[in-house]
Image 1 (cartoon, rainbow, N blue to C red):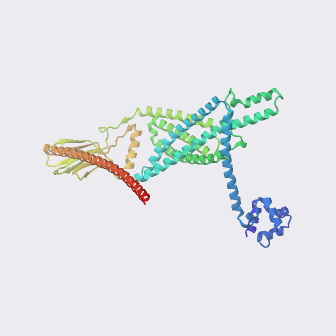
Image 2 (cartoon, one colour):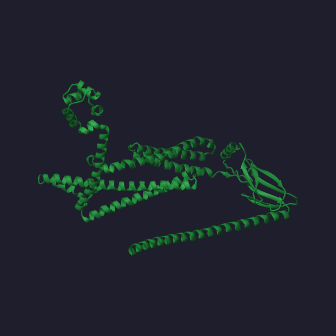
Image 3 (cartoon, rainbow, N blue to C red):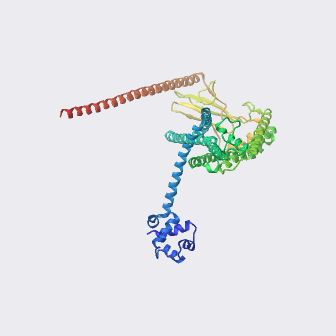
Length: 511
């Protein structure tokens, strides 16, 4: 029997001591103590009194867990409340439209449609931006996994957008019309009770019916505490939780950006000798930090439901934008005094030479410019001009093509960065290309063979690509034929099934 445990739980849930419960039941504290310990049980009249005091029946008190009983009752009451609010919302809407003029109904519908269009545009823009962000974040996944994840996130957002759009429209309709209709009805009822008392009462009556008559000014009534809707507030809480999560994710990237801007602020002092360029960069970075802080503060206020100081934030953001424009102006003025380091002016250019023997079918190719120079020699000399921070490298492909490319030398990254900083402080823009040009020195006959081999390979590659495209088209055509035949087979199978059914029906009739 669960009476001892239930009695103890009921007493604690109602913040009663054993003495207080004993006083309510007209017994001693020792009696209550014995009931809770299971040493004795209360008489039937006391059990009935306990049931009446704490709203339980005898079976629940004696045989069930009152905690579960209470939770079930609360859950059922909440569910009933949501259902009641939903039907109440519909009833009030129908009643309100019945009391409105036709022109006012049209105006109300147009207003809700306008809100819907604005929400559609806003959610569409957010969805477009979110789509690009998701593509960037999930681009590293394999295609199948990426496609599945993208479709799932897309479906979630569409559902979320539909729900939030509907809730916002319903809530706006409630604030703009339903709540004001209730206030107008209540005011009208009160004024009828006191009609004829004074002229002021008649004026208030006219004001209370302003929604259903010609309004001279726009009046927006906010939600009063007594008209809070469980139906809308429950969904709104869920949506607000999702919005806060989205805002938190959005703010996370601005926090990362703030860290990056702080690092850039410190690093900008290495260019202090550039004059106006440094001043402009410093102003832009500080403006970026100020704007970033405004956005982070807005996100924080949304998450913790804190009121934003709109005037101060707006002034801070506008000042940051203006400062950024001034900084960009300083940067442009400062860069006008820079010189771009060309190949002829760059003292960091070095040459690398490579000697190879010609073999049948050989060709030379590179991402960079390749030029041929006739020279009386038996072998081939490759000369590459490149930055001292890089070195020339070659690889031979399966088609016997010698491909020339460049790689950054080991442990040269910081040297290149240091020299670049020095160049910028001297108001020069460095040009560090891996390879500027590849020159091929060989005899006239060898050069003609190299060029002929390259042309032949290009032609073969083009023919190969055309053949691949043709085969892919053939496969696509055959797949279409297979699909048509499969569809025809399905139709024939249906015909066979119907024929067999009819045949069985006729056999049964004959029998």
